[in-house]
Amino acid sequence: MAESSNAQTSGGRLSLWLAGARPRTLPAAVVPVLVGAACAVRLSDDGVSRHWWRVSLAALVSLALQVGVNYANDYSDGVKGTDANRVGPMRLVGSGAVAASAVKKAAFLSLGVAALAGLWLALETSLWLLLVGAAALVSAWFYTGGPRPYGYIGLGEVFVFVFFGVVATVGSTFVVIEELPQVSWIASVVVGSFACALLVVNNLRDIPGDTVAGKKTLAVRLGDKATRRLFVGLFVVATGAVVASATVAGSWCLLGLVGVAAALPACAQVRHGAKGRDLIAVLQGVGRAQLVLAVTYSLGIAVSLAS
Image (tube, rainbow, N blue to C red):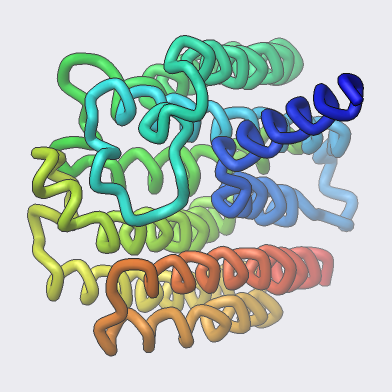
């Protein structure tokens, strides 16, 4: 009986940690790696060496960074008390389910894994990646951590676009072929726009609670109506970037529009005034659209470059 109770307790703790890692945000970490790797596809004999095994390390960096950011945000928001009026999924520290010190250790452990994998990639490719990696780690912690977190002054979207859009996509291409092709930069705009859309709708949902807590996210600063326009506008930008990539790499890149189309139901919900818990379904919809984008856009880029 005691063993069964311990097993249930262990299972419960594991489910808490999995929830704290916020698995629904993980597509934002996977998509740039897949798209970036697709931008490295070249079947012609152009003298470019390819190191595909490095993609797995790039994925580890991206996933560990995402999980680390999630735990870091959970810890920092929890100790600051800004999760007190939260509408979304449970937070470990804010709910009192897990000690703040344990969540902080989990954040550092995850970021440490990202740092070690990134160091390996830097040693295999270019030591300049150490600077990029250091910037990513610092930005991950100070998003909501420290005395003046930049996520509290409306700059969170900048972090997401830069690191989960441009850096993750272009970086994934670079570690494979050690070049920075134009299509990768354009594709990073598509990926970054989708990643930002996740954050924008998350912050749209949290406007009431964040306002009370004094957390001046971009959504709080813009207000409800303008934030909804920004959300839809990000997919307009993504559409334009997909078309631009097709002019550079080939028409198969237009398959990425399937991913944009998959986000249309989420856009409709936001435009029609979805609020509170209804926006959780929108978050899920954007996450699914990201995965569709990962498959269709990566395939389109790969086929275009291989033609």
